[in-house]
Amino acid sequence: MEMTMCFPLLLLICSLCTAQLQTESDNQIIPLGDQTEAVRREPTNAADQQQRFTEDIHAVLREMSASLAEQRVEISHLQRENEAQAAKLKELELQKTELEKQKTELDKLKQELQAQTAELISIKARTNVTENQVEALKRDGEVKQVAFSASLLASGGGHTGPFNTHTSLVFRHVVTNIGNAYNPNTGFFIAPVRGAYHFEFHIYAGGHASHPSGAVLVKNGEHTFIAYEHQPSYSVNSSNGVTLLLEVGDVVFMRLWANTWIYDNENHHTTFSGHLLFTM
Image 1 (cartoon, rainbow, N blue to C red):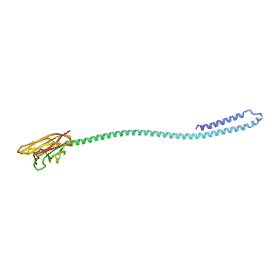
Image 2: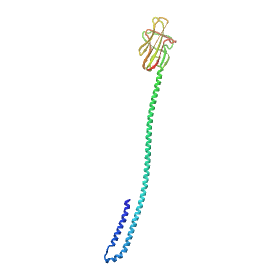
Image 3: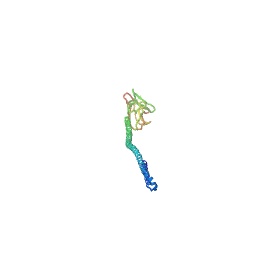
């Protein structure tokens, strides 16, 4: 734009310099013979030069005016573009600010979500622990309720034995079997939990000179306590009891002592009972 403005000015200066040089040339000394001719041409040349000079000035001014108008249009256009770019830049800055604000909010939401996730995991873990504790308490409550009591015969009456070897007894008339630890089909009591258990057994038989009455409590195949009595007449009663520390799966049952007999009927004279005292 500066070059466009400078060119007409240079043109105007050159015109002025040319006019001045022409004037100086006309003022130079000429021979006497030519002075008359020069005097006659001088007014015409001065008028022509003045007219050419004026036309050059007008041409330069017109060109400068046109150039100035173009520059004004161009400046106006550039101003509009600048304003549009400034507005766009301002909008971009606002968008950037909004994006930064949204990013900050998003980071905050992510942190809150992470905290909520951690809290949820903690709550779930505590819930699982609580559920496990409830189940454990339920199991403990169930296994703590262990008790049974049974008599030898399910119906009828009579003696069992004698046999020449120790013989397992099955007490078939079950009165109580809380926890189902006693099996009336096998006569076995199987410990469902580690703990202290108390057992009692009562033996009844008729007196006989050759046949005593006796039964022994067996734990995992080993004899523990025995109830034994012998008299030749009338009835014979004997009993015993014991507290045993049992592991899970230990087996307790009764055996008829070899060469003895026992009696039972609907009055349930011969019985076997046991219950859990406490877990360990």
